[in-house]
Image 1 (cartoon, helix red, strand yellow):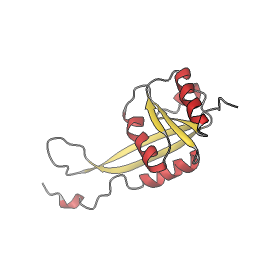
Image 2: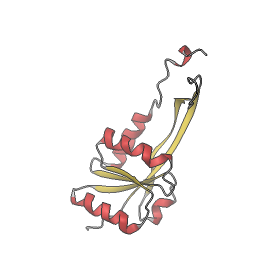
Image 3: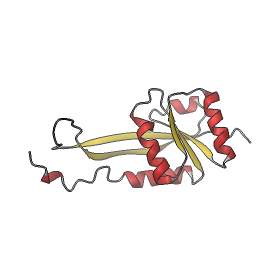
Image 4: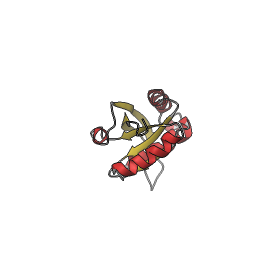
Length: 140
């Protein structure tokens, strides 16, 4: 199996620019909570990107209880942070009071095929859509 043709691949090329766009959307004072009822591949994988790359407090939860979210929001607002709720499915956000719903990251990125038993020998697309909504302040 030849590996050389894949040597120049830059996985997730363009993702850094898309994360920067999300940071501009949310502002430097953001705190990010990924609300994912199934806790699939969304928040668990992307929260560390926002935490490490943007310096936002970021977490992921399958608990979409408003009281639970309000507790996190109160703590982050006490630190001068604005809570943004993020989800793979945009319809989840209005139910939690997030408004307006906007695209935080929408993109298609090339990655090596995922394999366990052999070296990857192909490139595949990884598509992601993450939607964001600003949570209404609870301290105003």
